[in-house]
Image (cartoon, rainbow, N blue to C red; front, side):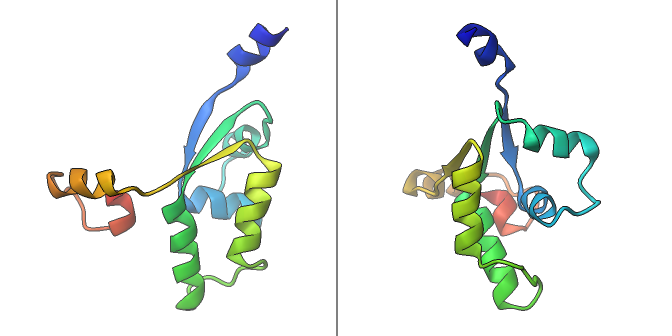
Length: 109
């Protein structure tokens, strides 16, 4: 039984819009994506930069969230099998040698 559950487990990296659309129940999120996000056996990775980006969007008036970002963060951690990816100094070192394909800061990280 344990082995069967391990085989069902999948890992996903969520970007800012996917997380936002899921929380808002936005129709821009496909049915397939909603199904994946509701599957309790899945593991979701979210960059801490996502929450930073959401906070910036709220502060500059581009996002009218219904709940504060810190509450959203806590709900995601509590209710979903989520791992938060932290930004570390080594990432900055790698970035120095990274070829720039685009200029969007969050996508570079």
